[in-house]
View 1 (cartoon, rainbow, N blue to C red):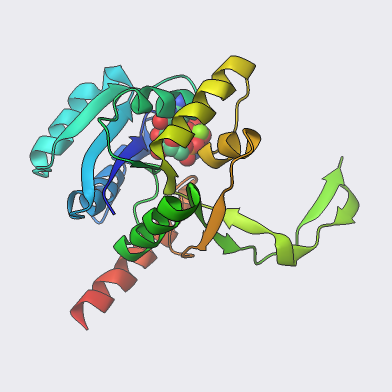
View 2: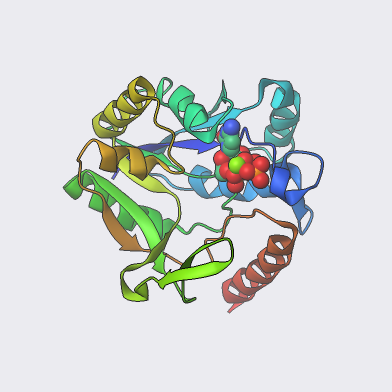
Length: 231
Ligand code: CTP
Ligand code: MG
């Protein structure tokens, strides 16, 4: 199933506390964003990569693209103040495939098989998101006092790439802008306009690199992937 992907990369990485965009941090001497871009570069079903960036960082992104010889055309588009605005700017630059994916630049371990499952599910149902069952017990609390224990069996931790029919995602973003609604992922905007969103079981390795300790997990996942490739 053919698709284009919007990769938001215009964040500041505040929780990483690295003093710069966390996507430039290297794991095994390669910047995080390169891992993410390589996956889509190598996927023949991916017909376009739209990377939304902070315009001030354009020279850095351009030099990374050149250094790592990322050949497939990557459109560099200015991001916004919030992730949602970055994605919206990306949507203006989609050139016309029926399916569009939105994938965090900070999730470098997405696998091709999951992308394929998601695009198929989105084609059939309109929208599809990867998620994994929550492992911890989750409680609701106010001021450190527990109010209730949430039934775990119905809880999913949601990841990206989130896959959509372009027309649905476009309408969802337009409505959200009109209503002044700010969601933490794209699927929530689709849910609000009453469209169906299906879950595809994701992969616990598909982590979002957010805080310092995630860099250790990332090294471990990379090592595991390298070992598997050798086998
Ligand atoms: N992102 C973006 N535009 C923004 C904010 C975030 O394109 N205004 C991107 C980030 O670059 C990242 C993805 O959205 O690839 C997921 O966001 P997150 O993990 O929150 O990254 P940051 O916003 O950079 O980190 P933090 O929230 O800790 O500042
Ligand atoms: Mg953020």
